[in-house]
Length: 419
Image (cartoon, rainbow, N blue to C red; front, side):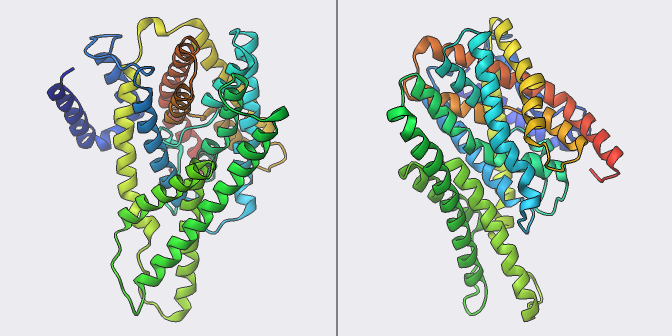
């Protein structure tokens, strides 16, 4: 496709999406399915107007997915309800850790014993498809900072954290394939990739979020009364936190999420303290002021990336091994890992059931795959993992996209909760 044709396609799609927002909200499917259908139509499966090659364009796709995930993680973090309590966060913490480990292990076992992949490749693929996606799961995530829905909170919080908790297993898979230094008996992997990278990411994120919240609060109040550009501050926080984490070998995705959470939590605490002091109007906050802009960027990235996914598929991409892996992940690995992780948590069974099904895979999986390719993954193995991952993501868009609204509608009706 030529540049004018791309402008025409994307422009027309954005116009249709903007004009039919209410209609799509009432439709039984998600907007992601429409974007995917457009990509498949213009791609090699149908009209063959263009073909996006993830292997040749791995550096570009890594950058695009990296930015999309970072923006989505920030948006998820600033929507976390305040105040923070361990009882509320227990379920998503268990999903982001215990469920993550179990999913990686189950998928790795399937890859080794059914697909015949080496152990390193199995663990790597498990880490690629295990994390739920913060970009494509908008229909099951918290809609605004005041949203108190337990299911949406659990799924949003899990997606925010497990994009970081999957990274150690990506490095483990690369290490077993000889593409990453794990140290003697894996000691470096444990100390650096697991303990240091995780703890330092959380610390950096919380420190940066708290610092920005306090600085913004001071500048907005008397005697300064500055007007701040919240959009710039939000993007700046993402850039500083992520860049610092990359420099010190910490997991930047995890840090950005916790920076957004800390920003929101701190601003809410400061707002409560200001009430007894006679403040008549609540001051604007960076978290809320930057949220709408970030959500718009998130939607734009979703349009582009899903079209590229559709434009990467051929008819023969739908192998039995790829479809089998996707069904195993959705019907066995995800439900089993969620149920085991939430044992004894007190989470209602209907929330466990929906959390077990709504493990949406998407942009995050593509990022990890491109990250592995950029770290020297052999071309034959890279092509195999690309095919498997693309089908997993595509089937997730389809199966979760057609089931999310009916199942959530049933969930809210039975729980007598407002949608």
